[in-house]
Amino acid sequence: MAAGLFALRVWGDELTEVAMVPDTEFVEQDPLELNAYQDPDMWFSRPGKGAANDPARWEPQFAEGDATNPAAPPEEPTASATPNGEVVQSDASAPDVSEAREEVPSFAVFFVHPTSYFNRSAWNATIDEAESQNRARIMVRGLASAFNQASEIWVPRYRQATFGAFLTDAPEATSAIDAAYRDVEQAFDFFLDSVPADRPIVLAGHSQGAYHITRLLQERGGDPALEGRIAMAYPIGWPISLENDLPELRLPACASASQSGCIVSWASFAEPADPGLFFRRYSSTPGFNGQPRGDSPILCVNPITGTLNGEAPMSENLGTLVPEEDFSTGELLPGAVPARCNEQGLLLIGDPPEMGNQRFPGNNYHLVDIPLFWKNLQQDVVTRMRSWQQTS
Image 1 (cartoon, rainbow, N blue to C red):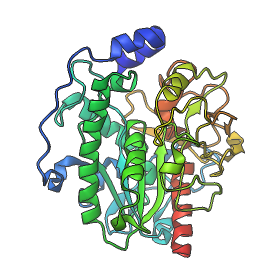
Image 2 (tube, rainbow, N blue to C red):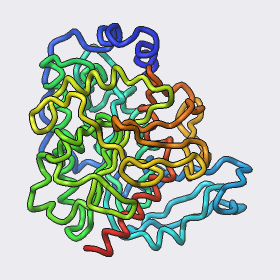
Image 3 (cartoon, rainbow, N blue to C red):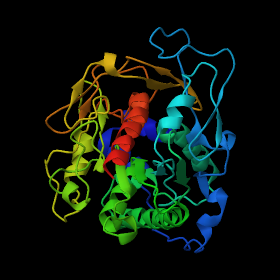
Image 4 (spheres, rainbow, N blue to C red):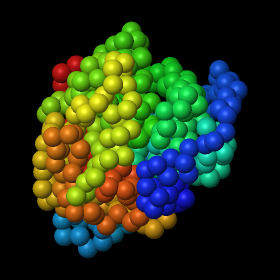
């Protein structure tokens, strides 16, 4: 990943494409076995792994000595039970969430991780490519953990398209993204077969993972097996055109903080924002209705307010997950980052925050879309699931 970020920061848009887009032919890998996702090793997270081996069950702690910490830290680590009976060992200085967990309605999350493969020697990662898999596990810990109040969290491994596939309109790139989606769809089918039929579903993902979630909504949203079950969708960090994409996704944008059965998404930029590369790729690709997106505004649900096109000061940010240098852990810092949706649908976060080396050119904070608002997102999911329970 370091090489990819260096290219983005130093070489600019066109040279980055040359540096990151594979110059090889697309070679399709053999299909996965039909029962591949029965193997627990094909999942970063799923029921039965246990909290110690499940990165999505991580509960980060608040910064030590933070006066705004909403709960006094216990002297010793505390254990709490998730709704499906798994025992989670909480960090010693994290807020005690055992009582809150008991009040959370039952729901299952299917989360697709973002791109962790930056190699240009192939268009798709193999399922056992060690570097990308290790990186993906860290990403799951920092991103999917915001959904850790769920009864079940399922995060599949898949043969993702390389980073450069999203920087070009070459036919090989389309083939690579389609191949990755087929793995995700196969994992999703196993997820559906495994989750109780009366349990509501939350679909979530970031970046490439968010794209696959939107495609699932578009292609599978009308499936009778899903009727009345998709309680929420969080395709975060993937631009969704209000005109050319959203009507095809079968769910509306979330207009209020208590609404369920809707879509939440945002794309984070510090100010001054220069979204040239972002919008160049967005406008040059067709939407799900087959029409060019052009300069159509994108979906922006403010992660602090939970409302469409909202605005909120940093004082209302419940906790930004600030990573340590190696990104394997981090701590929550409340009141650090504001958020407002502009007329184009970008989420503007004010001055560049201290988040390590985690930004693209133009003050693009795509890599930390979720960590910037980790605690608010955790609360948002629970609030909307309570609403779903009351209205279903």
